[in-house]
Image 1 (tube, one colour):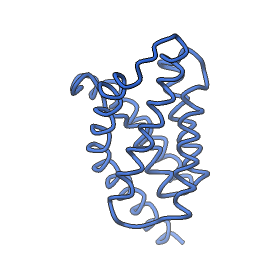
Image 2 (cartoon, one colour; image 1 turned 60 degrees about the horizontal axis):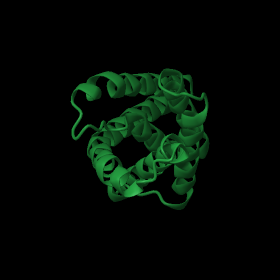
Image 3 (cartoon, helix red, strand yellow; image 1 turned 90 degrees about the vertical axis):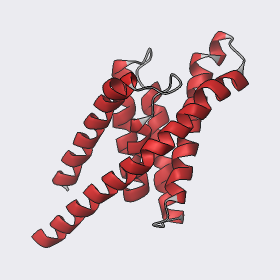
Length: 169
């Protein structure tokens, strides 16, 4: 349990650092893949509601501390996404890659939509279709492409930890 928690924290920190440094320099169409959404969705999908909610909370809180104008906005968004993805785990669980791709897309859309509401709509910028075509859609595609590799990597790490935990018992 402690190993899984430490590895989860390490994965969150690495994803945060990659998202805020490396991927900023290789932005395509001025968008960056949302690695913290990928981590939240992956852990919510693999481990369930509680883990997805806590991972989402930590990811969002890190973004709040770094970029947020209000502490808790990103934490709430990520926590909600992690909870609902973990809830979907109770309904569907398959080894097919199609479901995580759909979950990455929906989660990134929900994140971008909440971001649009709080950062643009409340300030009187109402052109959602422009924002959708120039920000949301490219970010969704970039996040899904990067997310497939990260999903398999995180799942492989989680499986290795599960096997080692079983061997220790």
